[in-house]
Length: 287
Image (tube, rainbow, N blue to C red; front, side, top):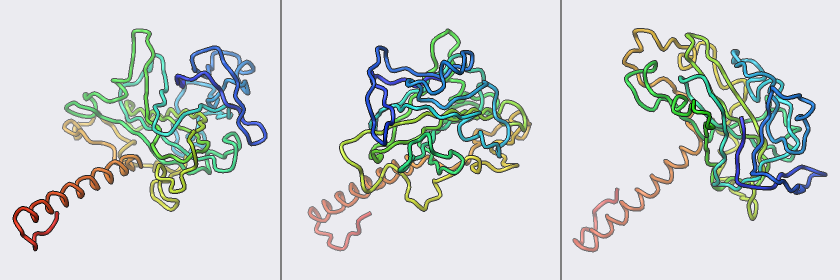
């Protein structure tokens, strides 16, 4: 997997300050398990946590469910502003069935390489599942639409939440494949972000409240026997089923709903008041 941004600067942490390092290439970074580890681990251009194999993680209690195996942290960060797009890039993704999601965890006062990803609390910022089709097995999932078999890269763009507090974060991309009955396959990948901004946002509106159901741990998000993931999509009982996943909605979805509701309430109040002015109905209630 590659993280792609139109930037030409890599940031590294030195004495709790960020120093710029110029690069001569379109900002592209990847960890390649087919290349010698010694030539990649701890290199100044690495922003992605190390993974040793393309094999999936099968256990929902596996500590590597957080950031893959071994999850060795990089030394650099992807600089990005809240509200900008971050694009993860894959080549020749094999599987067509199952949801995809993106999570964030703030590194707090620590450098992200010092964070224990199993103790960290994550919140979901994006997800996609079944897009269309008659059922779970024959429908078109985002995972299938995401595939590219012509040699071109498969792009996975995600918007970093607006109003996200200026800080360091770990971003976690997860592909969950459910094409094998009762045996979900997890493919997590993590990278380090430096979210830039003019000033810190005290409200932290881009993140859930401190005590909120939106914060989760890996492992800990998924439960044994959960029909959403431990499922045989080819069973007769699922032939007309088009909804499978009941996971927690991304926090950004809640923010979008709140924004729409606020806009609707404002429009209703304005309309109501206009009627009052026009018709003189003092007792007319606003919607």
